[in-house]
Structures are given as structure tokens and as C-alpha cells.
Length: 548
Image (cartoon, rainbow, N blue to C red; front, side):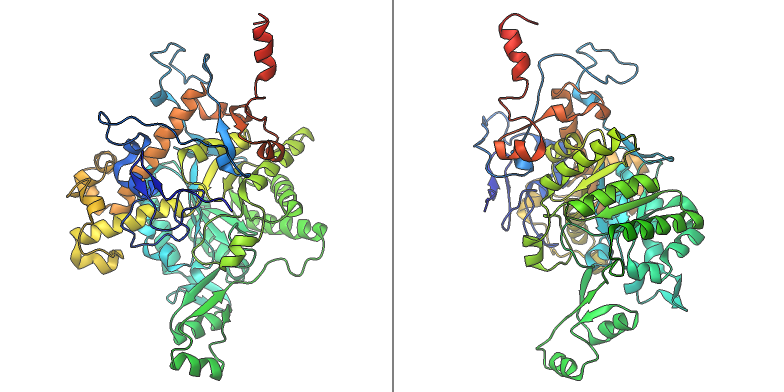
């Protein structure tokens, strides 16, 4: 099993727990005092692109042979000449071809194009309490930065305040809160996507959305995710809430109405209950039946009035991947998110996360292959978002290039959530009366923060930029977590621009698979990318013989 280093001496970052390929700890905690790369970038922004202590140090890469097949085994090309995709109004002069001029805007959609300031989106943030507790940070941050955010499944069903009559929702304060938080700062970039599953469909969430918000939201059908191959789960710690959820129609384990379970709970032998969603499509036995059912569901959503519809699929095998791509094309969907094993979770069975499904790189490589076959057959290929353990700017470049030209976004789950945790902890220190409401865990700033600054304007590299966006008065209403999100995404944006400039691509649309190479032959075989010393070898040999 590959082991990722816990510290990065060059950047001055470290992981509290065991790190994974994304650079995040395997278990990311809301009260963490730092300081993994994502955590620290929320504060210092693009400064973290460079080694620390400039002027007193030199730095050298610890590159070693890449072992195994994963995103770590992809290498990014740089080129010695040329410039592609120079933005309008600029020239190929070196004064214009600088990395800050690289355009990283993107768009996705079939008939209606949704613009994004940078090519990322959040994973589905649904009924987990972390998603609810830190939602304002996530949603306001996404709106200010201009990328899509996804309201995950079951938000209506777990909300005690939602009203469901005759099986259909007529009021959902929590869902409304989440949507309004985003739109308060929405400025034509990004989108809010609302995901529905079996229970949401039964509860009439789609009808509720279209009646209240029209086509302002994108609705997403869910087939699965990379963390598990069963429905979504949460844990609740009171018997009453567990019984409430069971009455709402959910599977609750153990059964809160079983007298034996109740007695065990009374004696503290059982301290929590897991709420599970149902599996979809269990009444369908063939791929043809799946096709008919799916197209019928999409047609119904369009009849309701939804103009933008997406699909989220998980780390299933090749049949399900091919169906997701083909049916997204047939239905004219706006976006297909492909989430590989290794993707994050708010709650999933741990050994299921470790042992089920197709890891991200292998799944994403096949997604490209099937999309290319579909295009060759003359079909419109759906726009893709690739997900599963991606957190840094090099991940963005690699995923976008691997799936080019079909991949428009990189979906990130756990990484941007760190901004919400960190910002809320800091804000709680400055606003102790609001600490509980903010879900802040700190009583004082830790040394990992005071080493950067002691007041918000000094702590957050993105503070002044956000203030410029919203104004000197409105900045007082912005969650610190949203400011932290701005710092994190600014680091991602700057790093992605640098990688693109090095590849002589000055517009994101110019990125291609030719910009990648494999660092080992196993990865070359799996992805169809050339091994690094074989990439461009043919043209190199011609040059050696003077054939320029």
C-alpha cells in the first residue's frame, strides 16, 4: 500500500493524521488546528504555491519513481516555445503571455451554458450535519468565487421543520435556507445544483423546487458516489430523532422501535442510529430497462419545467459508466459527474470505502475512452466533471487534461469544506457569543494561526479581495469560512494558471491529453498516455537528424 508523506518541509505543511493522495488527512476533523496544504492555503492563499522562508533557503524536489497507478503517476508537460489560446486583445508577445493572463473560466451545459470563474465545483453536501452547520461558509464562498455548489440528497427528509402532507413536501426551511444563502451573493457565475434520490423523489422535492424557484436551480439525479455503493447515511444520537426518521420512510439501523434496542439505548450500549437511503433501480433487471426508466425520469423533469439537469454516478464497473455516458448524451443532460473510489464522505462504511469500486484514475481514463467512442459515432458527448480525491492545482490540471475536451470541471468534496471549518473556528474566537451558532471549536487562536496574523485582515490573504467584491459594510456579513474559501480557490487558480502557462496554453479550452505523460508504464497502459520518455520521442528523433 502506498504511503503518502505526513509533512512537506518545503511548504511548511503537515498532516495531523494519515494523509491520502489528495494531501488531506484520511480523517479530516472540523476542530483541526492545522496544517495540511489545503488548511494553510485557506489563510495565506497563493503564497503557498512557493517554498517557505524565501531568501534564507533553497528547495529541491523529492521526486522519486512513481509507484502504482494514480493521479500521482501523471506528469505535466511543459513546452519550450509557442502560445495557444491567447485571450482576445492580447498578442503572443512575451509581455502579454504571462501566467496572470491565462483564462481559466469554463462553462458547461447542453443548450443553456453555465459559466464558472474557475473549473471546480463542490461535491454533494446533503443531510450530514457538517453540511448543514457550515453551509453558509460553503455557499457564500462558492457564490463569491463563482463556481457551482451541490445541495446533496435527503435535505428535506431529515429536516424536522419540513412539512410533508400526503407524501409531498409543502415547506422545507432548510432547503430554502441553503438556496437563498447562495443566491444572496450569486453574480452570474456558478450555479446551485440540488440532488434528488429515491426518498426525495417520493417526497416531491422536484415539484417543490420548480414551483418555488423555477429553472434557477439545476436538478441532479443520483446514481451513486465514489465512497460507497449503497444509499446515503447519517448518524443520529437520540431515540426520538431516529423514530422520526423511520416515520419519514427511511431505513434506520438498529430499529429504534425494537424494545431490545430501546433498552440497549437506555443503558448506553447503543448510542447512535444510522439512517440509510434506499438503493435505486432495484426493480430494473436489464440495461434496457434502466435506459427506459432513466429517459422517462428526465422527460418528466423537463415536463415540470427544469431546463438544466445533471447526473452523478459512482465508482461502479464499466457497464454502469457506459450507461451513464450514453444516457446522459441521449437525454441531453448538462453535466455528468463521475466520482471514483477514493472520493470523500461525511459518512460511509469504512471498509466499503477501502475495498469497493474503481479508483479515480482508472475510472476517469475509461470515461474519456467511452466519450471518445461516442463522439466518433457522431453523438454529442455530455460535459463531464471528474471527482474522487482531488484537492490541489496539479490535480485540476491533470483531471481536466485527462478528460479533455469533454471534462469541464473538477468536483471536490472534502477539500473546500476545510475552509468552512477553519473560518468558523477563527470567527468563533473573535465572536465568542456566536461560537456555538458558528460551530467554532476554538477558545483562542492556535500558534498555527497566530504565526500568520492576529486579526482577520492580517490572517486572511483574501480578506481585502472579498471586501472589494461585497463592499466595506457587507464584509461584516460574510462568514470567515467564505473568506477562507476565497483564499483557497485563489491558490488553486494561480497554480492552475502557472501550469497552463508552462504548457503554453493561455486559455483553459486549449488543454489536451497531449499535455500529460505517464511516470510509469502501468499508468501508461491504463490511461493510454505515453510513458514520459516516449512522449514526443518520434519528433525528437527527427530533430536529431535535422528534420525540424
